[in-house]
Amino acid sequence: MLALSAVLTVALAGCGVLPKKDAGSPPASSAPAAAATASGQDAPPALAETRSTMTENLKVEVVGLNRVKGKHLVVQIRLSNTGTEKRLSWPGEMGDRTRPLGAIKWASGIGVLDAQARTWLLPYKPASSPCLCSDLDRDGLGRFIDPGQSITVYAVLPAPSGNPATTTVVTPVGPPMLDVPISEDAPTGDFPDPDADTVTPVTRRLVLPSESLDRSEETADDGKDLQVNLSSDVLFAVGRATLTPKARSVLARTAELIDASPATVVTVAGHADSSGNDAINDPLSLRRAQAVQQTLSALLTRNGVRFQTEGHGSRRPLYSNDSDEGKRRNRRVTVTFPKPQPATQERAATTSPGSTGLTGTTEAHGQPIAMEVTGLRRLPGGLGLLTYKITNKGSSETWFRDLHHTQDWEAYKYQAATNVRVTDVAARRQYLPGRLEVPTDGGVDFYCACTDVSGVRISTEKFAPGRTREFWNLFALPDTADSLQVKIGPFRDLHVPIQ
Image 1 (cartoon, rainbow, N blue to C red):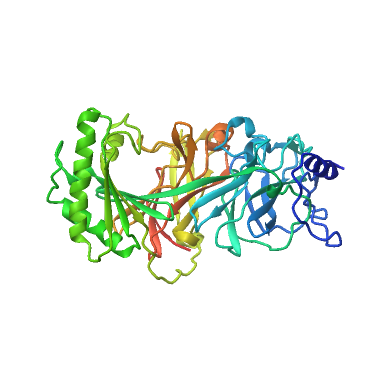
Image 2: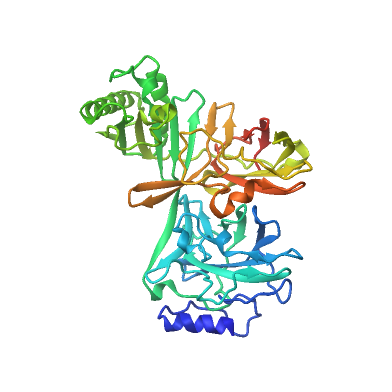
């Protein structure tokens, strides 16, 4: 009755429904408003599963992943309470943290990672509601899941580019689920058709930064373009636009990247921090961009590259100007061009992290805290997923807050597990956690592509004795490395093989 009611509601609203499996097909308990059912009763098999980092007994399983009309994706998620005593509240955990908090009752955080386009795809937004996904009111779902019970929720979103056979399913709940197979069959159940109404795709650009260990440059890769931010403190003397002796060696690497790219147009833009005024910063930033452009032109080994130079003064900061380090990073010349093609490589052999001693220990308020890396996995598109477990080995409850204690120049919208670094020691290059870029009326906000520890998830950092939680971070990975140095919070450096 609940499922029928939801279907009627959708039809009456004029949305239409997507094609579905023949009625004679085996049932899969996947109607949009699936009522709570006992776990395991007539349940479809899971395509992938994860556990909530925050809520110990909340299991999350993908039970349907269907590409429809070649351009839409229907994702069905089964949420199960594996405990025996307490009811679990699910809406706050499944809500998209990058949308207004009033929409947390929706299953708006269900999405997929489009590795080829370097985007995070989330449910469509209809004109009349926040999300084309399961909702408490419309679908008649309860706020709680009783012990031993399950509910199934859904989301309709754009299909990832390139028609991949598998994809990575993401939720706000726990680590992403990798290599989930996409079916070309129509989904079982009735789901609203995004083509029957006005909908807006909700996407988050994934920016994956890295930097040289000497801090001379920082690179951001969005899957299409490479943005190389060259430190003005390295390139120029204070208040000058004449390149220093060291500048040529720094610019040589950028020239090699341009040579290896398909670029025909390269943009060189000068930027300043918030010190001084526009009358000083604007012409100085332009002159510095012109100096960099002239040297890059001389260093290139191929023809057919045209340059555009710009000077933006202090109007486009990358980081907050409230700290010295933020100001230093904002004093830069940014060179932007299409990213080079990755080097050909063979996939590194899979290694079991548990057998290589990838562990560490520290203390929090007198309690022993243990860490174990559970995987550093290479994903399509030059991405990498790091997962690791934190355990309270003590006898008392304690807070462990070292995962979000990062440097003050890293401005994110909310606290998250950002205090993690991955380093290619041989190449002298450090990789920073990925960022989700969210447009706002005043510019952009950045959210970490990692475990969130704020808002409804603030208690994620609170550990009872013996409690273990698994955390995750997305990074760019160098194309040819088969292992990297990993630094997680206060724990010791680890040499981690890439799977």
